[in-house]
Image 1 (cartoon, each protein chain N blue to C red):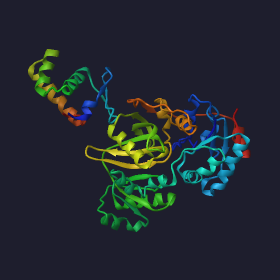
Image 2: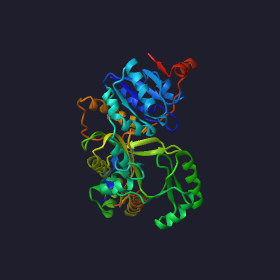
Image 3: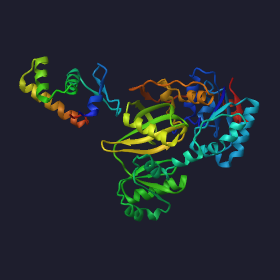
Image 4: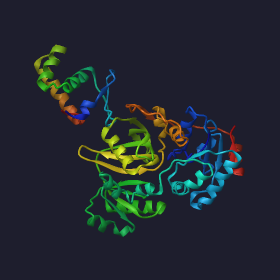
Amino acid sequence: MIVAVTGINATDNPGPGVAVARSLKEADGDFKIVGLSYDLNDPGNYLDFLFDFNMIIPFPSLGWSGIKNALIKLKNNFGLDAIIPCLDAELPLFIEYQQELKDIGIQLLLPSNEQFELRDKLHLSDFSKHMGLLYPKTLAITDLNEIKAKMEQGNLDFPVVVKGRYYKAYIVHSLEQAQLKFTEIAQEWGVPILIQQVVQGEELNVIGVGDGKGGHIGILPIKKLTTTAIGKIWSGVTLNHPDLIAMTEQFLAKTKWQGPFELECMFNKEESFLIEINPRFPAWVYFATGCGINLPERLLKFINGETVPKDKEIPVGKYFVRYTYEVVTDIADMGKIQTNSLRFNK
Amino acid sequence: MNSNLKSLAFNGEDFAFNPMTGQSFSINETGEFLVKELIAGGNSEQLQQKLQDKYSITEQEAFLDVEEFLIKLKLYDLGV
């Protein structure tokens, strides 16, 4: 089976693609893996032990036709049976046009447009209510000068979290800090900016793949033990947290979620909050693979109609730690991609 | 019973792990013994007695050790 994977930017702010490819390389099935990239410098373009073929594709901001044409070219010249999109910025396109890809024989497992919209940070408050879960008090603000007035109206006091609709979140302790971070995030990601109540507790995460019928084909709850300066996991441990598992099952049952997901939750003694739903694999997806729950492999088996193993129990107390790694290659390898937008590795 | 305390898993090498929160602790053999007695339902007096019997220490030493340990458990949200 030939599978394309995006998000192969295994940088200090890593995309999940390299971890997905590594999972597939370690799978039982015979997968040929294509690394799709938007940037010549993405490390995944040079990991020939993981990727059989690398290809540069047009940015999602340029619209669907460029990506679609690149995928058709790939299918016609190399073959392509399935794709696992891994980046937030491209997901709206892949979700909208998933049927078009299925029609030309490229399989994928993604949430519907409706499911994708539900988990938008702007809608998460209503969605949490619908699920009977708590969501931190959140204000959507478009004007820097409205922060103070809106916080007073909304009964919110500092500290608060200032977060972008798609990326970045900072805890701030004063109006000045809030305005500074508002500007910083707005410049990069636009408005609205969310001002959110800080909730105390343990942040816990779950990775999984929904089967589209209210169940799943594998989940793994974890706690991030250490993170980098930009909040990315560096080490973590698997958990057996019945309330977190119940929350995940409730999320799946209510949404009939289809495809990969990551839930970010906050638990304290009295309350539990749903903080974020990511509609894709997180970059730490290999953690699950290392624990015997190979979610990318299961996803592909599932869309192929094959039997997916059921986990009798969650592997608890498994420890994950990242490390840095270097690859030395020839500049000509970069040149091949630069000139042709693609390169065969074997 | 504190669910955090009840959930603690020991590896027999002075290490305990809470599978619900991901927290881990260094804990010696005596600490492990006391935690297991607490989980089994022992109160502070019973723990003192068991400690005296097991380690041949005085009543006062056992009292101080157990009280100090119970305070430490509370600090780590493992109090009974």
